[in-house]
Amino acid sequence: MSAPENKSFPLAELQAVSDARYAWVALVLTPAGHDGAEVTDPFQDALILLKTPAVFDLLAPLDVVVPVAAPARLELSQLSTLPPNRVILRVPAAACVDPAVQKKLATLADAGYRTMTDGVAPGSAATLCSARSLMVDASVDLPPVVALIGQPGPHLATNMPSEARIVVCAQAGFSWFMGDFASNPDHDNAGDGTSRKRLLALLGLLARDADTRELEVLLKQDPSLSYHLLKLVNSAAFALSSPVHSFSQAINVLGRRQLQRWLQLLLYARQQDDGLPNPLLPLAAVRAAQMEALVRAQGGDRDRQDMAFVAGVFSLLDRLLGMEMTEIVAALSLDLDVVMALLDRAGPLGELLKLVEGHDRAALAQAGIDAETYWQTQLEAHQWALQVSRSL
Image (cartoon, rainbow, N blue to C red):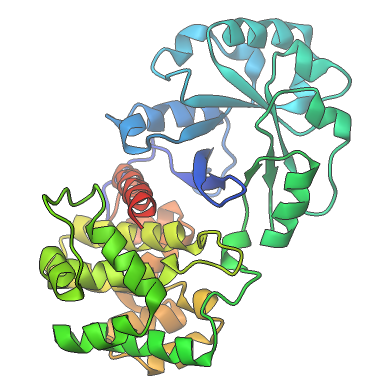
C-alpha cells in the first residue's frame, strides 16, 4: 500500500512545553524538511498546518509557538487566520538588531501578537522588537540575568535533560520547559518492588481480559490507582448524575474496553515523591491515541486499533518502571505484533511506533499514510492527551 503523493502539505513536529508542575502550557511547532531538505520558509509551512479546520479548538487551551525565520518579510495580513491570544511568534535573536524588523514586530505587538526571541538578542534589541519572552537552550549554561529580566516572559528553557535541571532553571527565572526530562525521570515512580509486582500483575490481568473481581482485588491493594480511578469516573468527562463510590460501579460506567484503556493510562498517573504529576502521562496518551488513529487511517479494524493503542501506551513502561522492556513484556500476555513493536520496533505496529516517535515522509508513504492525514492524527492525539491530563 502506498500513500498518494502530497509533497505540498508539510510535516511538522509538535513539542510539548510544560510549566514547573509539568502541566502542558504550549506546543512548539517545528516544520520538517521535504525529503531531507532544509525548510526554506517554516512560517509558510506552519501557516498551512494551522489553517486546518478547528485546529486551535483541538489544541485548546495551549499556545502555539510558530517559527518566523525572516521576520522582515512578515506582514500583518499573513496572520489574519491566527488568533493573537493563542500564537507566539518565534524569531531569531540575531534578526532583532535590524531596525526594520524592530519596527515590524512592534506593529505586530500593537495588534496583539506576542514575540519570543530564539536565543539572546544583543543589547536592547529584544526590547526594541517588543519581544516578551526568550527561548534558549539552558541544558548546561544559563543566559545572562539581564536577558531574563528585560522581558516579562514566560521564558522557555529548551533541551531540559532532567527534572533536576528544571528546578535550577526555574530558580533562574524560567517558567516554561521543553526537552526529554519526562523520559528520563529523576524519581522511581513505581515505588518499591512490591508495588512493581502489583503493577505488572494488573497489566497482566488487563492483557488477558480478566474478570472484574480479579481487577478489584488488585486495585484495592493500590491506594494511588484506586483514588485515580474513582476520581476519573466522577470527573466532568463522564457527567454522571450521582457519584460512583465502588470499583464495580466504576467498571460498569466505563465498560470493559474503556476500563482497560484508562487503567493502562492510570499507571502513569501515579504521583511522584514530590507530589507532582507524572510528566510521562500525556506522552503515553499521545502515543496511544496517535497509534490508534494511524491504524484507523490504514483501515484497521477495532481489534487492530486496540493493539495499536496498547503498543503506544506501553512503549514508555520501561521508563515508568525503571525496568528492561524484555522483563516487562515477559510478565504480560500480549499479541505477538505488540511484543515485536515494543522490543524491536519491528512489524507493522513497530513501524507505526517509529513514526509516532519521529516521522519522515518516505516512512509515511511506505505505511500508506499521507502527510495531511498524519497531521490530523497528531492533532487528535494531542487533544485526547489534554483531555486525559485534565481527567486524571
